[in-house]
Image 1: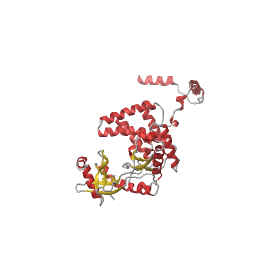
Image 2: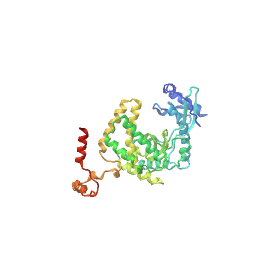
Image 3: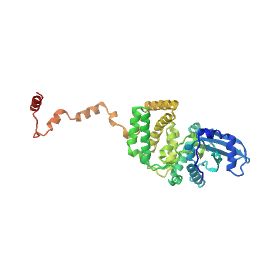
Image 4: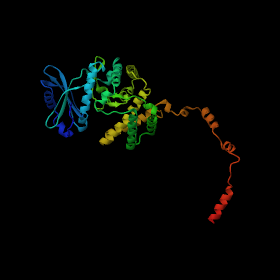
Length: 375
């Protein structure tokens, strides 16, 4: 099991994560490993540094090291999850492989390195998704297989677990925070508020969720998904989180094939509003992006989020997320409005309906008494 009881700053670590340093740590982590050279991937996103290496037998490996306390704290839970998922793949429960660590090391300066085998395939791209006749279906089946795993997969790791109600409350909190940070267009706020107030929208069974899916999360080989990586946001929660990125892509044919294959591979199809929640989550992601910019004090991100929110506001207009949220009177004809007006009571009707035996007050006397008191 990987220990995570350490602390460091980005500046401390980045000075010690050169490709050659990481390669040396890989050799120390895996007895007998002889590093012959470097290869892709090579990345550093400020949270995690990665470097590909090739051993003397031509095998490819990936060496990773967390660069922040936040990235490091979740390593132990993620490692446990990845080993469980690797076992699920080996017994046929998952149609894709995962980057399960096979070795790790730590030097005296607390540089923590994790090594996993290079995942088969190439990184997925939007172009491939749009043009492949097989990838949308493969994506649907792959994500469905992850969601079909039992909750115990997450329970055993210590990763976060959220009920349907807690998922809803987290979104309410997100919207409140966004509204405090910036004036969200009124039509968007009303659209989202109505959706979050609708309890029926959040009737679902929590599942194991990846939580941060996108094309770069997947590896593809021969037109099918071969591996899934980047489980830093994994948790038990709303399966719609893993659908939002693709169901709102704008390619109707891709979305149709993806959703059909996903639903066909799920044993529980009682979630009637799965796709609607995916749409909601996709839209609220812009609020999350706005708040990220605010917290990072990055004006470029803030302006980008504000622009996208404004464009979304113009795009959706007054359309509610669900048709059931629509005020049907918005579609009434003039004749319907006139008919409704005729049903409204007028003052004479109200007077005629009064009880003739009810006590009355002589207002002239009241006024006179008031005037005398004032004098």
